[in-house]
Length: 385
Image (cartoon, rainbow, N blue to C red):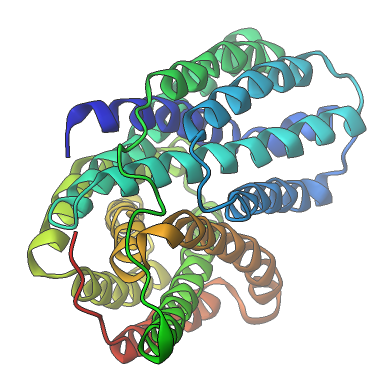
């Protein structure tokens, strides 16, 4: 894949990941300053993730022939600049919640369009590597956003945070403007007609559903693990610094390993990489459930940073679906990730109260194994680039 196709998506996804990873921990706190109750902090985060999922899903409704993805990113970036600045000036909860929802919706649009541009430009032989490089922006955003936002919040307050983030969102516009559309049009691939074509389309649809279901299960587990890690560390009396440090370790793991995992999926097959990652995810939850000291939680954080890599799944979607359905497939896949986070956070909160943290974490480790069973059912078609 030529570098010119990857530069724009890298810039805009880095900006959005820095925004999201940096502000997510303080979002409930800022909402409480605007009138939200302490018990509604989790609901406020769930609302933000819901808007993110809706944004990624909405782009799947675009026409197959839509060829202005870069300008859709630019427009989304401009709106994000305005809405983020508005968030810094609000003094009541309703305008802040509205601006938050719109911003996270637009972030979903940017994520899906950047991934679609990458997928359409990459050949099947280097698709995993391309998505792996794009996935590095998650870890880089977690490191820079975590340290940068925390420093600005401590020194200058929440208002300065959102004004700074508004300036950062200009990078989304720049990334969209320098993005290059693939010269091949989405409708250029041949579509088979007749009974064979219908049966093949039905088979691809079933395989995609199995992949989406498996990813949903793992996303629920990841959300449970992330929430459970923070609560378990707090219950052990570990410091806030130790808790936030694990998030940085998670981002570092993602940053270092993402391209390698993507490249490896190009070599040995994406399904087997996903199966291995799901299996190790299940085992890592056992480690988390029995962790007692900071270094054990840090090991889990590093593992989870590797295991939540988002490069292999979108590349696998591109392998399975015809080119003209790539945008819809990727938007559905990313929507499932965010939906799984919503379900995981909501369900885990209830389960922690009813069953305890360790028991809930152990039970959530069964979900990735169910995902492995679904992946084993998939029968991959032979496809070209």
